Length: 259
Image (cartoon, rainbow, N blue to C red; front, side, top):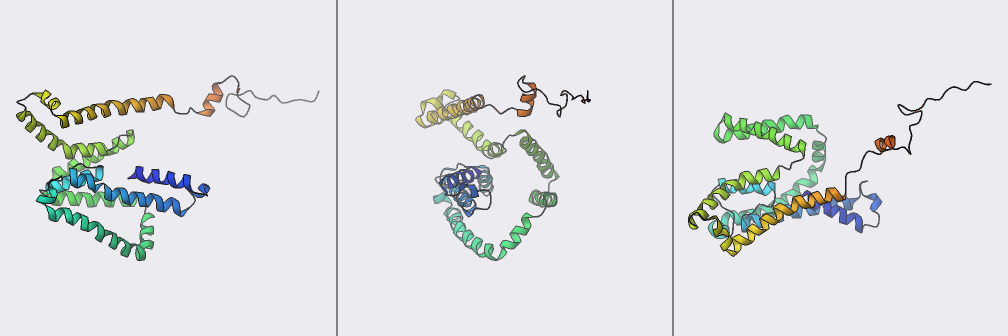
């Protein structure tokens, strides 16, 4: 969703007659990304409900919640659980109506909430999360697991690793193992049986191509557009830019005495 918002902001800025106003409160720079954000949020339900494929980390959490409720998203969901499917669709319309009703009179309150410091919101968020985790099974192990996973997520954020794929792995790992064992029973333990089916062979080719292509493209981009070096450090080491008297290590001016 962030990608959609950023791309829409770029399009709005390029098509605007006053691009210099973007970043200074231009209404187009707010309305465009928000419209793209809302569109991406609702359209991400389409692959989840029809194919059982979560489009992002948020949909992966929704996927796990449906599995815990005994509902398997996919092509058969409309026939097996029509009340859940159409309930999600109806909730989108009802949610938009309530959003309009609540946003108009409470916009001032929402702005004040944004002014609350992160040091105040963080303990409250952790407290509410711990209460919710403990009320599910009344297990201290679950609370410890939340703390450990929170530390892992913080470290991943520090080193630049996105947490979305990890959430998808937790949600889809069990299904992958179950379906893999079922396929192995069908093929009598022969792994090459996946290559004999057109659908599975095509999916395997796509997986291999994307697994190899994405790192290569990233490496090519880094080699083609290297990170800019520090200009100040470069000038200090270049003979064409000697240090001045004001810089550390530069030649000092000797006082001139009248002759």
